[in-house]
Image (cartoon, rainbow, N blue to C red; front, side, top):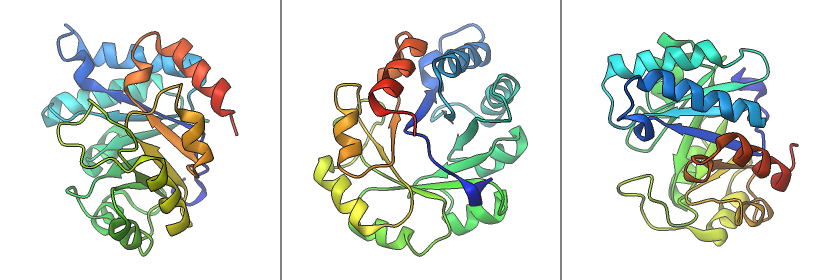
Length: 214
């Protein structure tokens, strides 16, 4: 799958931290994902920055149960091992995670592999790897990461577009009010966390209406 990835305009992220207080967090994560799917999402990333391995695997397997294998790409954040264990379609790694080469060794050639970058030097290094897409951010101020790093802004997206031939995902503080400008700056796809939280089905539908589906 990784070799033939065509990014949709919306990269929806399910942040498990939102559901940490739920009695059945795995079920809550799955229900949230079902709402994203109902709204038209075709790529979903599972992110869990605080859970332990067994908790993450339980939630990931529940996600795998409800997300169709045809027509939807399911991405694990950070953990290449859990990507395999839960049967996900790919993994996304950051600069402090397993290297792209290491992640590729774990997940193999057929799964999707993405990498976060934050400045031109990282983009240049990413261009020399066999990752399937590169992410740039944070574009705008975000509250979903503890230490998000300096903002790159729309100009950073433009520079990233000029620096890479790989599919480009923009992330960080992207809302329905700002998403079109991010695409116009050169991103192929926008990753969204916070602006999907309330009424995820309707939010997904509106993002896709604004962004277009192709």
